[in-house]
Image (cartoon, rainbow, N blue to C red; front, top):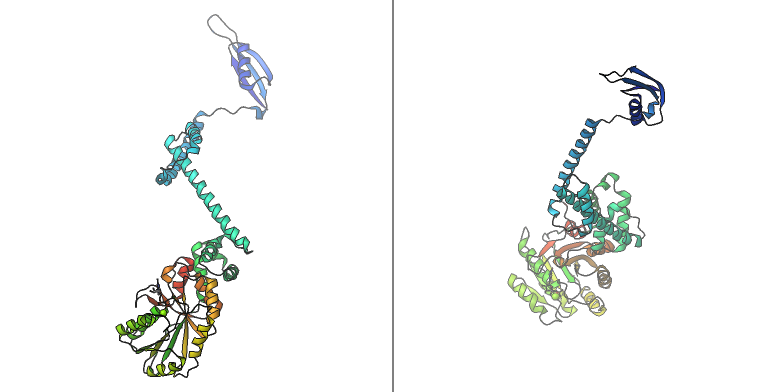
Length: 418
Ligand SMILES: Nc1nc2c(ncn2[C@@H]2O[C@H](COP(=O)(O)OP(=O)(O)O)[C@@H](O)[C@H]2O)c(=O)[nH]1
Ligand SMILES: [Mg+2]
């Protein structure tokens, strides 16, 4: 309870002051005439009222209100500056659907029409990005749900990339499970570290046959088999040049061709052999094969070209097998040549049919014709057989390289790591 005094020249005026400030609901404690009205001066009346503390109306503090408004405006304008500088590049966007909102905002926004438009444009843009993200996330989640794999959202990028690379679903699910299980929690926060971890994991799975140069008196006999047109003959020409001219020391290289079916096939290899001044033998019958090998036994490397056959042409593959019964001075190393452009299921099919021969190593060709190598990765994982060379173009002898896991994984994660 508080007492408050109001004074005025008349009682009515004093009472009006009380009502104006405190309303009708007041208790008048006392009222008295303090000074009588005379001819020369006004009188003075005093009314004392009692008021409850919570009924006291806050006094208007004009100055502090103004300061508050100023402060808010200052903060707003610096925020607006920041935002509009971000959206400067995007000013050309049209946001027709927001014209009404813009007008309303301009009306109530003390920052001026241009700034308001910028902020609205930026907001619009952010909501567009958010929509796209939601869409992408939903797409990935759809795929994941189809596979009944519980995938945390931070793994969606590596999942989507691996899937698009042609890796087999079975491998992808298994590897994802492993990754989710073993990746340290700390690494999961950053998409780069997730990718790097995944890269390391995949790298451990890729079997590579490291090139070892033959040292005399050792010799190496390499036979190249595979479907027609994958690049067997071209790869042999590149390898012959590599062994004969490009390694740390020059090696003696001999060539045998069993591909005498196709017109032009022998000439193709003969031309390369002639250019490189390498001996070449042509064999039609398995019984002549031993003699051909013997005549080239002084070479460090003997490279054997074969007739290309469809994986379903069992007869031709069986015939190749009969060549292998010959007694030789060194083991015949069988290289299955496959194209990177062939999809995983077909690679498996080809491998199955050629595996009546003792396949030792893969050579992959045409890596320049595709950007995704998940199919190659899956075949290596399935068969546990190593890959030795990658052919990366038509150019003889340059477009050939030793196989490497990093090169292969670039075609899965779309990024090179070192
Ligand atoms: N783009 C590309 N073409 C290749 C590659 N290797 C071979 N070729 C081409 O594939 C075609 C067939 O090659 P060839 O060696 O005759 O295949 P073969 O039937 O298996 O002996 C030729 O036109 C080659 O130039 C490669 O790595 N990349
Ligand atoms: Mg050929």
